[in-house]
Length: 289
Image (cartoon, rainbow, N blue to C red; front, top):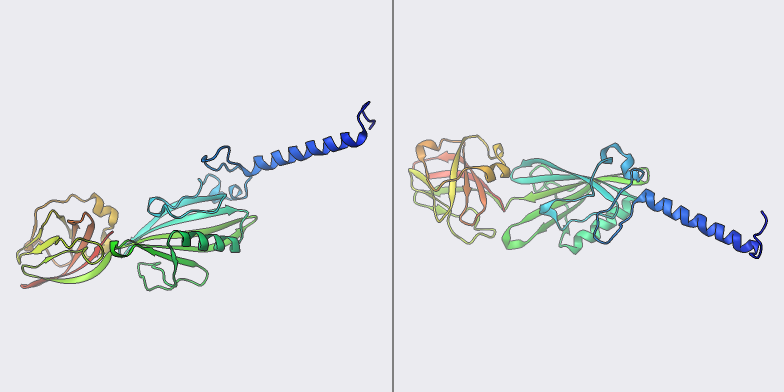
């Protein structure tokens, strides 16, 4: 190659090298995706590592949903949000996630630090199957969050972290716990507030007259029938039920009946009738936050 007249050869070689570097950087940016402007969603090209996995070919940018708006994900993370069945009043969601250019250690470091900033606390127990006494598995990271008197309990676990080439796949289990789970014997003439112990204002919701179960103080109720178990209905069912201020006569309250209550504090409770005697009702209940 002959130098152009008047321009030293070393300058030409330098210019060619710089041009090649610019083209290389441009190609790399096109492959990994960039934010065009602040505030725009991350754009993942089809060649990004997570996009090569069948599960995440069309997955959106990862989100934990409305109940977990304080949970963020590492940069370059795709995710699919699933709703899993409720168990014993514990409401479950799951995010199957994939993070580009990550490692097991970097993911653990990220979630440990990021969740702590939002008030989450590491815990050795996790309600995987509706039992809050269950132990957190050794291969998982488990966290809990609550705001004390208001009775809002949430749980999160990070598990199944696996390498898929230069990407890492894993699962976030997201749980909203009930306000209260308990049993009660309601005597004739007794009124009871089902959400008073964890944030209610002490206003009774239900009165047992001996012949009628009555909603009071603005509460409403509906007899859902002889369902046999509180797990026969979940929180979503309660939000869709048709409530009234009318009571239910004792003749309609057979053993194993389930009653839904919209409380005076605007929460939902489901009540399972265990026993109906002349002087009391034996019930178990779950109150939702």
